[in-house]
Image 1 (cartoon, rainbow, N blue to C red):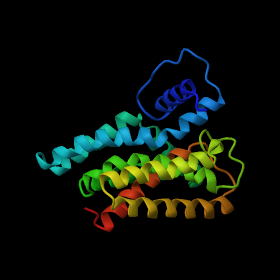
Image 2: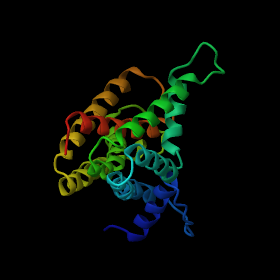
Image 3: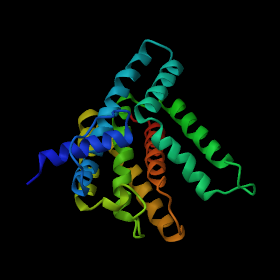
Image 4: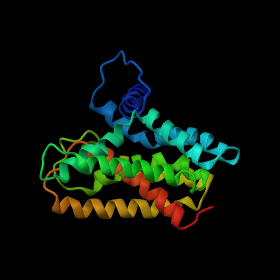
Length: 234
């Protein structure tokens, strides 16, 4: 039987980890609470995406570039740039320049991610903004079921089991069918691309930093938006 208390605590833990919502927990959390919170990540993503949808709706009134800027600002504020910082850390971990004091790879990667968001936010259908964060969180959960390596140094991947993967597929697909059934194509291709990429890298890359989780989220969201734009989903 599902423990509502555990679910609520897990929800608060995930909100604190990935959003600017900082609620106080007066009870001690345990591992089961954390696992239940992970199950709710796609729903948290949908809530974030719905707010982005409302902001994006103003692009029919105001300039598209301006609304893209507002959307990017909103995204950075609501996520506290947590996952974007992970892109910076992950790229610096894997791509080491000759001068170890330089962080050029991380800087360029972060700028590219922000530029892609700014460009794509005004090009994709508004309904894709609802699904985008859920696609990112779900991709992370799916990768947890793909990788075979020891993931003890990660915060989310090590806990992802069959129930998490089921939720990762079911929740975003259900809401994609509800808001714009064509987005199921984008979701499917995104999940396949991320799973295939994770499977290949899992065999070739020896070490994975804890920041790789945020990197997976950001890359998944970018891939989702790019696919949605390329196949011209309306």
